Length: 137
Length: 149
Image 1 (tube, helix red, strand yellow):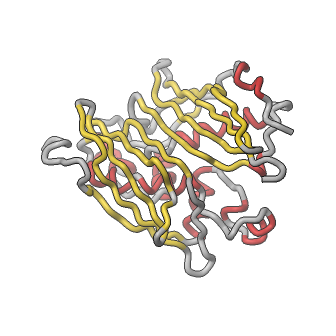
Image 2 (cartoon, each protein chain N blue to C red; image 1 turned 60 degrees about the vertical axis):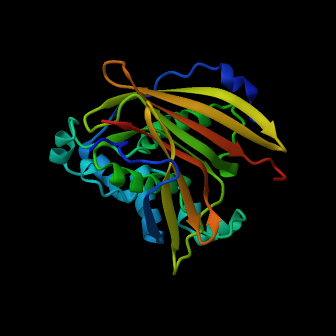
């Protein structure tokens, strides 16, 4: 089935919740090489005035697009992806944090589709202008 | 110290080529909670028309790390990394990255703006493959918080 068949602007194509723990952050630090201690040390985060240990923005950007990849199911690929980091994700040492992602069709055109993401923690949005260009394979 | 506006006129040499390894793609995929088989299974990737496992969309940030280091190492840059916040990020692709690619990244600082005591540095890191063909450009805006921000 073609990527765009039956799609409508505004339609939710994928939704998923991502529970994060400190382990998630340490794993991302190792894989990405971003060892800024504000992502795993409470004392350092507090010393620079942060409300707590934060998820790497690039970790949030990295998983927020995964529901789109799963929905694509190898029918298309991500040719452009952008986000604005509007609010940090605080990851509590005991309860962690849960980021919920919804992916909606934003634009349909000859080039394919633009999928717009919302990423929220509780009621608060953590990414702005999160847009994914998908192109048919 | 404010960020040096002359950075936009500077020519940065390409950094050493980055060879994309299959296990690195898998490791990064696990770290961004990517479960699709084309990130992990070479057979699944080949079935979808790729030479090997496909890197997740944000993988170029790993490759761009060397250009960030290059920028911060400029002695007159005026960038205090402890005051840096990632403002926004974009990846614009010509084709997906697959394991086996050898990527060469070149940094360009495209704009430096001041806003309410903060500085905003936008840079573009273009990555080409071993044939010199464009693969992806990583566009980052970093916000450097001012002394009283």
